[in-house]
Length: 309
Length: 329
Image (cartoon, rainbow over all chains, first blue to last red; front, top):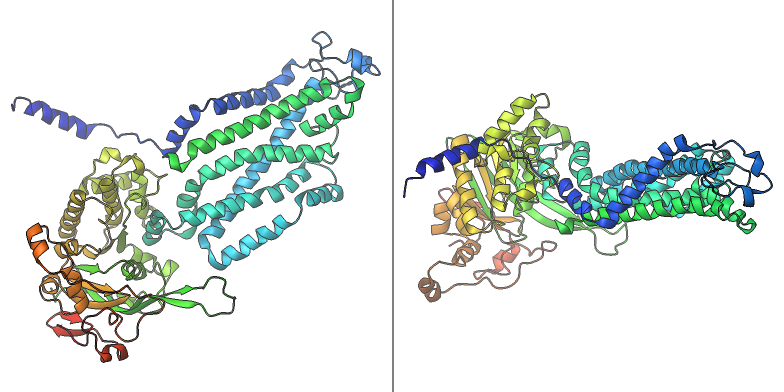
């Protein structure tokens, strides 16, 4: 019966000397759940392809986005059709410029607007909301009333005013979108902070004497990130939509720059001349990326949902 | 025990919370919730003080006031001769190293996004920012061994541990700075009984090894009796009775203590059925509007007109046995 004592002892010794066990963080768990979501994974692949297209695409272009193909002028509906022979894979626009190159350019601009807008929202909104929520009381009241006031101003009006007064430029567009995008993020983050700051691990940190600012960065923000990431992925398409709307109104990016919104606007303007491709190609990229962002956001929310833990 | 130095002396500590009635105008005066209303006690080095009382009597608030997490309205908290009351921020930080806390909910007291190693070493990073990484790791592994955790679990996350293990992690975090006093805020209430025993034995052996003082808060009288040298009974933010645990359980002087002890179930059905349990009548009064005089008089079987008029002082009724009652047993 005791014959195996030695083996058991050996085993116990082995156990004690086993290398440090690697833990699975909540992020790794969430990643596993996300990868099981087919719609989200497909969306990530599609979005990756669109991103790849916007960087690699120019090497396959036979025309730059500024060149005008004079041969198509006046007869865009017949000679400007999408064709491999003429080198206009997506056809030409009304001025005879290569739509393939223009779509690539628009993709770059639109994605950049979306990502930069969301990034401003994430950084400013998270810190602002976390500080307001953590300190509470009067600080919270003042900071959140400021947000309320800013939210009460119709942002489209401000954006248009900014673009008219300071001139139309991409920088101004970023400033305008950045000014408004963080407001709702700050609110969401503040609400989450209120629930997290009463958790015992925050109390433990306070009792240990960790300074407030480090508590916010080390204990509050990492526990907020789930919500923030989900909201940020949903914010990117919102930013793209805003930019497209402004461009559609004719106030956004300026020629020779372009964006999805501007291209769609052009395409919609010439629809009765039988050049449907001018609308459909930018619209395709626009719709596919918006859907992808929304599906990714949904997938992330399901993966990071604390109730699933 | 009387020769040992006094670590902590709390004198007439009051903690009030402002409560704003729903829909009140900004200029109306807010109500005062008297969470702790004049509690005094002292604690000697190496001693364990148990604090018992029913839910909402101010046990946890008292603990949080002692480490200045909630501001005291008035009174003194004297730690090794220095008054901590009213101090915040940087002034209190050196003292934080010497008083640590263990919390009720073991899992909630650990940050789910940090590894066990990071959690246990956080106090070290905070108070010794220049300590070398290797040294910190060594200390953390040493402490994990002390509380009965395998050091190779250092990179794991809290959700991968059981409740008892999480409480050990909490204890390791509290001990890593080698504090003089640990405040345990119901450290075993959320654990099942066999784990409770393990954690309590661990606390006791660590106390013997490191010469710690403990303030042990619980609502389980038998647990408190087992671990404490002296016990304080709280009722509605007021201290009722302080005595050595043997004395308190054998000869309770305050009627509330007597009723509390008689309510402890005895794990023997024949005795349990035959004995008469004297129940405390009535409801706990609101701390927003506590009764005049002695706060227990509304539920006390011995209440007299004097009790409504005058608040009884905490007085020494016999050697080392203090009670706040006009008509002690």
